[in-house]
Amino acid sequence: MTPTEWRAREAAHAARADALTAARRERTSRGATHPVEDFLFTYYAYSPGLLRRWHPGAGVELPDAAGEPRAAWRWYAPGSAPGSLVVDDAAVRAEKAPMLRSIEKILRLTAARPASFGCFGLHEWAMVYRQAEHRHAVPLRLGRAGTDEVVETHDLRCTHIDAFRFFTPEAVPRNRFAPTRETQPELEQPGCLHAGMDVYKWAVKLGPLVPGELLLDAFELARDIRTLDMEASPYDAAAWGGVPVRIETPEGKAEYVRRQRRFAERANALRERLLTAAFPA
Image (cartoon, rainbow, N blue to C red; front, side, top):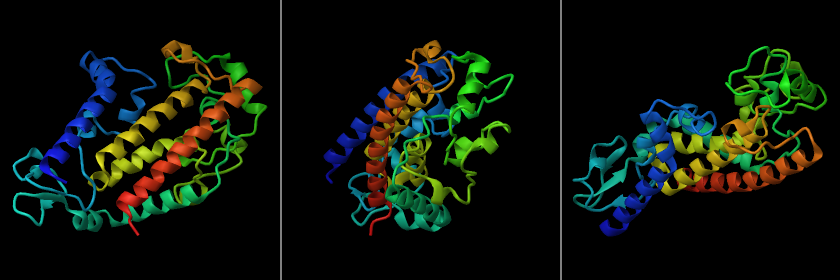
């Protein structure tokens, strides 16, 4: 890659990242928040400033880069040519070995497993089941009694630990599975919306081993999934500009599954790209 080529990719990445984070940065400047869009920045704790940093990925030497700000970034080392930089692949893998093994295992097993499309996003409903108060300052679309009835007349089959751990105590025994951190690699499956959002988490954790373009593709997937996650939730999505997906109806279920299938395809494609980038055969 020539200096002109990598600087063009770096500039394109920064511009794309800035466009993706513009609304978040504007809200932050005036102390405002958005319950749907800000989730990606608070839950995954990766700032707009870090998101706009472009990395070429492992094994790519950047000529004429030693005088650039990235020379002071962690995980960079001098390349084989004078004045060049390269991601210090060996140092990253040595320091993060246990985490990398865990990420690779989850990515490979999830991508290889058949997708399940029968949950209908009921994890969000289970998080408020029989609760007098809930965590969002947005009304429940069906009210408390109506929300509880949806949970009680459906089969809870959540496989994702980071959704299941927020279930109310009354909802826990209703779930078909009892996910734990230890069983996550065995239970994670491509149809799960939260597993799809977590592709972005894995890209973040893999750091400079992942090309910047792939990181932003994963961010966009997580953003799109988050929208459906909240539109299909028990909250009144219209309160923040969304269109409710009424999963308690046959039409709502069909809409949820249609979008869920597309997300599963996108997520698995990104999983394969992450595996190729960070764990080449």
